[in-house]
Structures are given as structure tokens and as C-alpha cells.
Length: 148
Image (cartoon, rainbow, N blue to C red; front, side, top):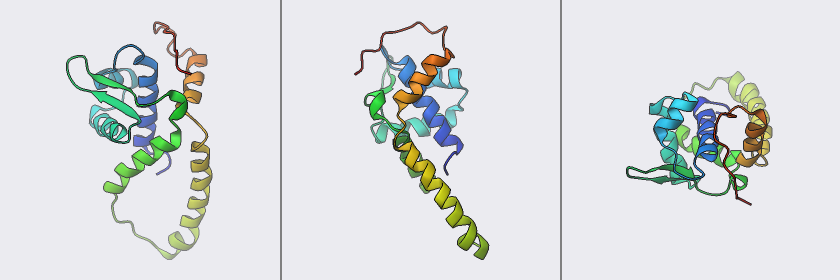
């Protein structure tokens, strides 16, 4: 599951929210428009991120999503574990051959564990800084970020 679409979309959504929700909540439609994430995926992702308190959801005409905690306190492992919950609910039964169970799966698990360990040290703030340096959203009105 390491780099499936939902995980990547979840990171994009949280980064988008961190970038655009400093004054007002970001609406799902805005994230879909900016990031090109299909709304059918995005809603499920956002709901689970709210349940896990990674983001906050506000209902109503001025509603939308904001970060549930500071950027530096949201780690990729948090988002990964949240998306893993969605995947486990939708998991289909896999065929497990001898080669897969004795050779391939242990190999993939070893590599996956290394990647997952790196997720524990990378925060949304780290990615936010890279996004800021990239000037990818240079046309966005610059807002002062007061989080410590």
C-alpha cells in the first residue's frame, strides 16, 4: 500500500489545506480544482483525516477544512496510517502462492518498513517548506504563517 493513490491524494490535500486555510477553511471543491483529485476519492479521504484529527471539518456556508494541529506535528506516518484504515476496510482477498508468501512478501515488507520508518520523521511542515521554496504557488497571495 506504500504509495497508492489515496495516500498520495491525502498528502496533496493536507498540503493544500496547509497552504490555503490560514484565514478561512478550504472547501473540498477548491482542493479538487487546484490539485485535480477526483471528488469521489477526496471526500472519503477528508472524512477519515477528520476522524483521525489530522484536519478539522467545519460545516455550513463558510465551512471547509483546516489543519487539526500544527504542520510540524502532522507526520506522513499519521496520514499513511489513516489511509491504511481505509484500505483495510476495502481489502480484497489476495491469492498467496508459495513464492509470494516465502520470497516476495518478506522482501516487500522489509523495503516497506524502511519507507514507513522515514515517514515517521517527515512532517507536513517539511513538505510545506519545499513547496514554498519551489514557488509552485507563487501566484498565491502570500500570507504570514504565525505557527511555531
